[in-house]
Length: 140
Image (cartoon, rainbow, N blue to C red; front, side, top):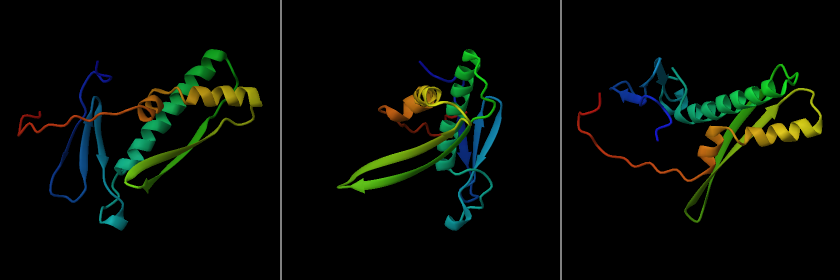
């Protein structure tokens, strides 16, 4: 079962690293930072991945907090990631820090559990397969 109603499509031309990603309601421009010869006209792929996790985390928490009727007006999240290579095995660690403002320890602990249940967290924490083929001009 597809999670999206419509496929996401992307293209790149001869403008180094500038990618155009089409989604159901518009276009997202992606690029690389200037320190690796991009022009920083949009988020790079790592930033986009972390942005997906940030948005999903915040939305999931907001739904839960609103359902409980708790007075938590603002939630903030900060993410970054690093990779390590030990004997050829790459491990990616994403650090997620969440600020709920002034909440008690019990509420904070419950919200941290809920953050881990956001759909993007679940995707990233489980096995991911990426079957890939070449369509030779058959992509719309």
